[in-house]
Length: 466
View 1 (cartoon, rainbow, N blue to C red):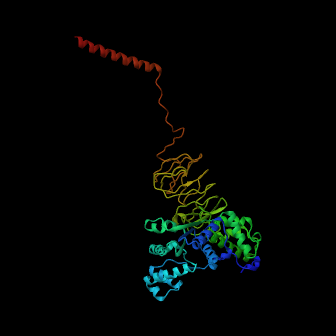
View 2 (view 1 turned 120 degrees about the vertical axis):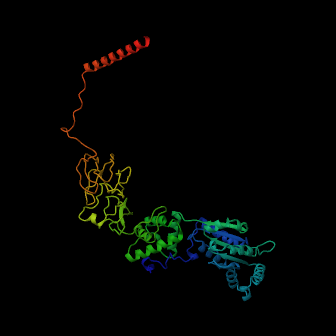
View 3 (view 1 turned 90 degrees about the vertical axis):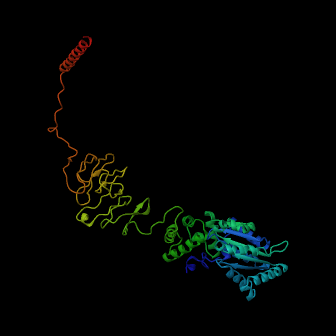
């Protein structure tokens, strides 16, 4: 499709396990050597672990391609999710046993031992390779272990290769599979590529296909591919192939990071630990969803449907209270603060919200940095300052302290500026404080009380001694 546009002989990033495109890192080279040695050296059971897409199947194809001229007879099973009878039927068909061996396990074992012995005496080797081994039932795991017991006094007759994802390693740690684990002679692991290996993987495939990587991908695009693929070869191939299709359609050469990002967004390939990026523009508002732009990236913030046209702050959209149609008629919309829209939540009577603490209150209040803003269409809402919080019962007026402003209203009706429960008297209405008595009167009162006390004391003594 795009081969001639990029000057290639063939597509370099097909997902088929073609050994010609095998890129050997240090780990892959070691794993390939272990596979070859395990089969040729008649070691018994060899296990290959690796995440999905790290190249296990391609490595197995490369190993069998290498062993083709070495008198090795092998059977490859790519889907081991079989029953016991289906498993033996598959082996009988691929080893070309008799029809009786397909229906009888006893006949199968007899013919298998005869074939393995004859192959060994002829100097050849027989191997059973099971891919996706993590999908094997436990009963098939046990059957594989028993088949691996076919041996002479000094060598194994059947070489077994189990290739699977990390779940296979976990399964081998189970107690009922300990016998199989004890018979594993070789073990090798495949991991993701690092940045240098990813760049070499892309360049190597393009070179094999007849092109030059530097003329097709920019360095920034390679870095983005590595970041979004996390070094998984299969994912790298998917991104590269789709990026080349997009570049071919738009006529862009070389391919930049923005093309790669578009592909990754379509495939939901995100950086590890980062949430998916929405593909919708920031100006698009869908029912029940408002989009914002923060830090150069788009992020979705949920809102509750309130009225046609959601209101968002200058930096972030915030949840908005659902209002009834009656309250919306002819009323200005909910206002936003100078920096960000603050979430406004349903409230119960008896509380006012500040920026530091939320308390329920019946009417919805607005939070602002400088001044009172329009309310819900019934009456001006109370204003909540940064520091002051005054109680309200949702029935009477609210006395609210702000930056030099006092506004009435609980969302029900208009009230005087000064509520009944918080009287504020003018200078003319203030009662005069009581006049203080002169010092002389105070002193006289003390002497009078002292004289009476003395007379009472003398009277008591007179009655006591009489």
